[in-house]
Image (cartoon, rainbow, N blue to C red):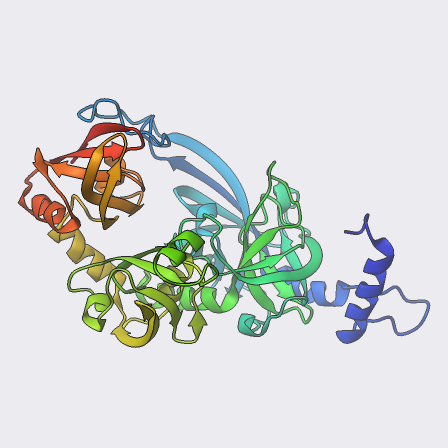
Length: 457
């Protein structure tokens, strides 16, 4: 931005300084962010990680199912790795540091380097892959922290500074790297990032090594934890994302209290309401919401009255315009609280109330009840096909990568037409077949113009 519009940036920058009380006192002084950064930077740490990556099946990333469904994939040998990142001290008295889960995942040794050069061993108190957050602890005195802001009050156009350890340039302490920009957007989602998406977008330069570092506002208050970038080549292109500190604070509190996350669950699978689907269901082409594809039995959603085909348009105070917002919104609700869900059913507005349950308990119950289909979003499918004739079955609309179905090779879009050599014309018959299965379930799948068998174990 400095190269493109340096004159315009100078005007904006000077305005920024005057608003925050950092303008030069006289004409001989140089406008600077240094006073704020001097207070903030001691709370930012460098993180070096050594770890072991578990073995991964050689075909784990392939989109196609194995040609032979009975073939067992042989995992690769575990691999050692080293990586770097950043972190923020949030409790100096107890040595608590927040960073990204992806920075310390599978770590065997974590070394934290403070700005004063001290190198400390850290241990993981807890982590949450859904929000990509982890909490570390070090044993040290005279640690520094920084004030925490309110990310809910952040606005597009606010000036921000990203602080961290890009490319490991500051791995020996002494100083951090700081980059300047604005908040480009709020509540960013639908980025194809697995987990909860509710990001602050900024154009402040963030690069590999910045993960887990601080995003601070003009007052030097922590408003986000830097986590991801969009880039065609791995470096900064002015599109970076941070986890809002209000969301991070709740995760940290749960980890410190319980050692894990008690996340809310509703028990539904939703999909994007495309313009074509909206019109087919009697709505206008530009109607927005999340289409309910499946409601799990005995779930909070079923008890509240939600049905497949409903379109969710709002949850509490959050308007829903795309499917990813449903997971994010529900995940951030406290277990045991009520969620008011505004829907459209056959064009008619309705408001339902569901009690948010603990995701872990609900998921464990579902997994125990139906391990073969656990983690799969399914809907009834019936359509005439020029290749397959009249097709009726259960279509996969979502698949968790930790599910048995995904590991076997099932993918969204697949249509399951039989299980254990018996037709499954709808979701109910497939679920019944799964409950009757013992150690494995053989399903026939239609995928595009072809068909294949998949063995779920």
